Length: 399
Image 1 (cartoon, rainbow, N blue to C red):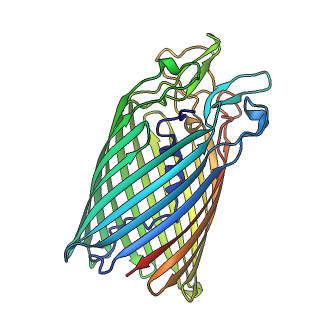
Image 2: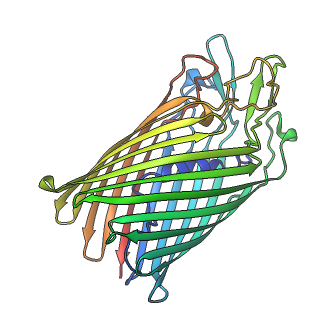
Image 3: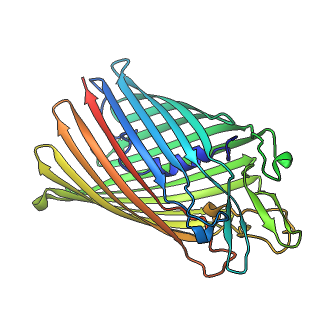
């Protein structure tokens, strides 16, 4: 079968891989160019819980996506002031995808894709970082490709240190160009789908970090992004009761969003541990906003062993044009039953185990994620909300 969704693999895996525990972050906080060569590898298996029989059109528990991810990072010096980081990522996905929601006397049910979807995505990201006495500058380029989706990105980032490096200011920007070439399949509205479309984005970020004491660090940042072009999902549909039929997913061609992130790092020396507390607010002109609270306890046991249990709570409101189904067509022409635009909350519990050696480290990370609607209205409580588990294993090696 042809694949179900342009950008589906990108969206699903990005959500999972954005969490702590994957490849080391590309932080500009280090003081100087890397003196050795670093190689890091991660393997991740991401598995969504089957959608229950009472919530889908098949009348039985129906499997959703499983994703396997391989990530490789290579980092080494190219001059006395500059190093290079190369990230390569390969992902494969299989499973079924939600298409639209159908109202029934017993409540809304999710109509799923009719066959197993098989897809693959490959990414390459290259970044050059230059270190000077009081500044660090980084420039990167990225490319991502699926069989019906390609993306090119450029970014730059600058970091300045002040006050004996107790104060840090960081600013960055990025642009990207996406190309969507939707495939056709046997779903009713396949003939009405786009054959190709484009999307552009630009973002700007500004942040600061302040050392408050020997054991306390506080940081805060803002990010503003703007997207224009094709923002819909060519593989999703919506049900309109007035017409008694489905219609293609349709979303505004412009999206502006902003985020305010705050991080507190507190060293707990008597316990040989540290507390990480993060809060993030997100808003957009689609009238969606969200709040994320993340708490981590980082415990060192000596001998290179470290354990990090954590919990994260997330809640968001629905996009202004979201409905599970529509009694009538909206006058502005915008419709979507995509569960990711619905009103819901989620809790994720994570556990990370690391062991550091003289020339490297090994890591193990497990997460369980559950989500639930926060509305009692059947038009807003999506039956397609996802629960998932993922496990990551990997290593870092310096030589």
